[in-house]
Length: 391
Image (cartoon, rainbow, N blue to C red; front, top):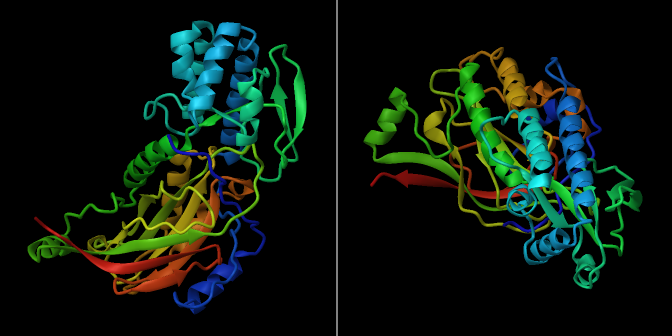
């Protein structure tokens, strides 16, 4: 199980012109500059519908779990699980210990998976955790907990928690209460892993090449790379993102990066890279992770758009939006930055919280070696060229 952590979120207020200027002026080694999410240029299924479906399912699950705590034996079992694990797979636990609750949670799981475009791609996503470590003493002492649904809204002021009698309690979202509260949210790490698969599948289906970051292509250039005994990549040695204050009830977020550029066939391509180790803001991680596989690209330049998934992303819709935008961009025989096209493809209502735009890196090159700041000043990466040798 991964520990709870504070997700990244920053205010998105500037215009697309900021990013366009950065595309022309940014060098990777200069000091970071602020940027923001451009407005949408297309219409796709509303992100708000996904958010409402996910939030509604989590709230129904929270109410049901709260009611179930009237059963003393079940309340004791759930308390033991919450005190010994950072995250409790509550649907599976209910299937073993509380069959009456299981059907409600299973229905909520199905609603969430469908809303996120993951139906059939992932198992139960609901999980339960103690809202804050400061609540452990009261819970251990036997105080009957309340249950609240996690929120993906950074700006929320109050949190609604339910007790076993069905009564609602309004709590301050910024200060954890003394009363113990179980928080119901989704396993965003599991959801993102499945979402990356859906994103790649849908991009390819819609005509945009996409591959695992370490996978070589089957193009003539790749066969040349194979003949030389391997291929060149850009490897992340260290990475850090800025920190932000978040509501205590907010669910975990996950970071992923969309690497973009022109493939060997001259088509714009997107290679999603999951970054599950980025648990905490303000912490330097040293993942030794491959970010760019240069055998996939025609030019010695690519872009990277780092995003945050807080629970309400529909990966099918995201792939359709990005593919539709990139298919309009033709190879002109020279490198063209694709960051703006990716950001502009995302509908305006998605910028209310999910998926959050974290930062972007323009004009990554194969020979980059050192520390480079993102265009928004929200993160930095230390990278180096790395040759993947064949056995």
